[in-house]
Length: 402
Image (cartoon, rainbow, N blue to C red; front, side):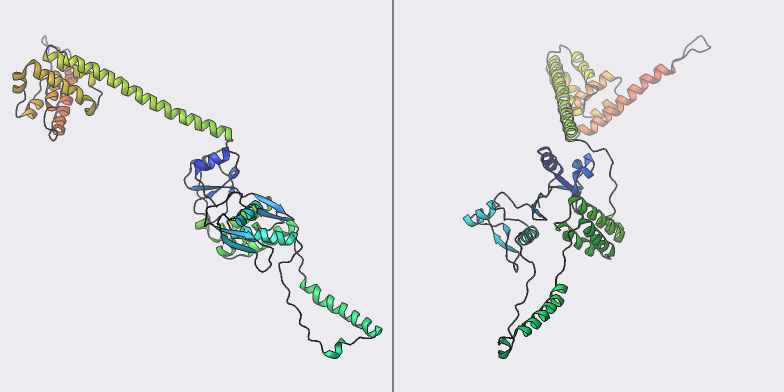
């Protein structure tokens, strides 16, 4: 049995395969995908398989044999008409005899399937699954002498009586009525007292060739209920989101929309990155061609919403231009105590110039200096807002600005 994940199962279903599903790690049998919500394909707690296809031999439903040659050395099973040996096991060698068995539809990868196949062949051929011991000849010599007609008649009558009394109890009628079989298996399921006993009944009624699919599904439901009754903690199903089952076309449409959304997000990200690159290129060009230090430092106003990594190329270009415009002055404005200058920056323009100097310092000290820059910027911005809010008219002729 090949276990599929959600993506593989969806692709197989789209290709026309019948898919079955069950909870991962569950002892319960696989059930039709129609009994699960459409979201189960995206749930990692479920596993899938392609539904087993059955063929009819006589009155029995038999799992189909494989149609493609397996890998060499794979254990295989071939049904046999031998009563004492229901299936022959062998390793696939890709020989002529193996290929002949394959073309005749007599190769299975599972022993249980081969046994059911063998039973069906024996049944349709008029054979029997039970053997009888040969009766040894223990008669005495004189018992073989010819008897008279009266004796022959008496012996024949006695033999008829003996045959009826000896043969009739040995013949066990095989039940073929699906209704009675369901009743029989239902009683056996209800009588189980352990999980192992319930699970052991499953292969029995699943291999019965006289039960239809709806009968086995009903019996599977009864086993699930019985397992839940015996061990609620283990077999209580986990809560799942209940949604209406979606058709294959609807699932395909949802998949196309999801892929389209991913593409749109990728394009938006690429567009935003291209816009940033274009603006950064223009700002670096302006910084390179700046004629005064103020003209160069004012460019940082366009980068308020940028990250530190995004601003760094521009800050490097501005610092380089400042050194070109006033090399000596630039060296003087890089004092040993840059932290003090940042803390005492009189306005945001001066702070921006100091931030450019920070980018020229050692990478180890830059994060700490940038913390002081952010703190001083916050203080300057709050001071500006407080000045606006605190201006108010007074009763005296003079005005005081707090």
